[in-house]
Amino acid sequence: MKEKKVREIRLPDYPAIYLLNQDFNPNLHSFSEQKVKEKIEIITQKTNDIIFVCEQDEEVIGYIHGSPYELLFSDSLVNVLGFVVKKTFRNQGAGSMLIESLEAWGKTNGFYGIKLLSHPSRTAAHRFYEKRGYTFTKDQKNFIKTFDC
Image 1 (spheres, rainbow, N blue to C red):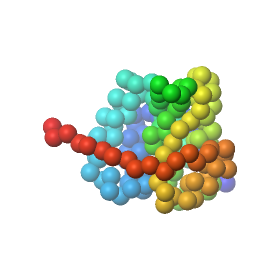
Image 2 (cartoon, rainbow, N blue to C red):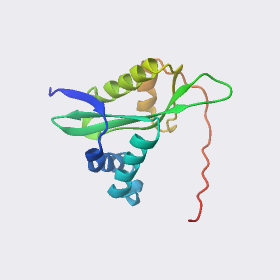
Image 3 (tube, rainbow, N blue to C red):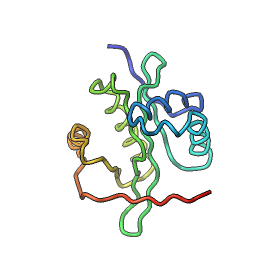
Image 4 (cartoon, rainbow, N blue to C red):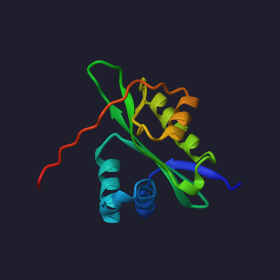
């Protein structure tokens, strides 16, 4: 088995991140490579978020995006905003390496824990999280309103 490594995201990773997003959800095709590049720049330069990528043979095969999450009724958490491993590399350790890296980052930076959302249909993902000590807390509906710009 070829060696995988986890590192922080770099701007030149944007084409691979775009393809991972497509692999996860083909409906994201309208969010272009250029927009992904711009988002990486914004996130890495203007926020306290962290994005780790997993690579094998210099190919980015997955990423996890964590963001500090502050609430008025909980200690500080890291919110997982994105977590994707390329389909052909799933169940080979990349996801474990990514989430463990985010957990270590969260502990080092004084966070209480990690929060994430997972679609009800993603039962394999739910088992992945539960094996790592994550607890199911509630079902909820997500709402979004977009603005005409």
